[in-house]
Length: 264
Image (cartoon, rainbow, N blue to C red):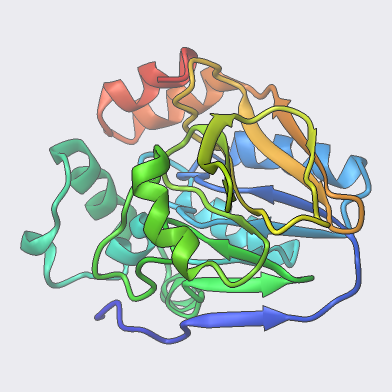
């Protein structure tokens, strides 16, 4: 199956609401279930996944089914994209343990689950908010930029159509603010109220559900009130030991299990 481009962007026009946003699940069903319970408990009216549902973790099919069963809006990440490529593995530019995890994942999924991944869009808009896995710089899977600083955020902001956007990919919770007077400012994500009356553009990375890399092992997500601009980062504890055991039993790299304990 070739990855292909089935959908470039999906638009869902709805009224003001409380959004729950997360990404980078990476086959970690325990973390996913914990984050979902937290967001629904807070009354989120729409939950959005920023992609990378599979890869690294030992429960890819369960994570896909969880998103489907709970009707969570979702876009495609790079690990999802490469998992769909069951023929051109030699062209993948990634570390060996990532490649091995994707090849293992391919053997676990049903054709129905492959079909669901295939039909995920690369980006979407909900309630005037834009969602993308990596960057607006590319929406066809050709490459996946990492937005880590002001320089790497420039191309994204140039193409960002909405005032507020969310991205994943780097597994670190960050807030980027682009203003005419001050350029691009980058800060660690913390509770904030975005100035929706200004000309600023905002890009929020909620961190990772299944493999955080900011030295905090807890699953990361965020709520965003599209009416007030209130942004609230969240952390959710889960059974890390159970997740690690599954990774080891599956024969995946032990480093993938070890790093879950310290958020690296």
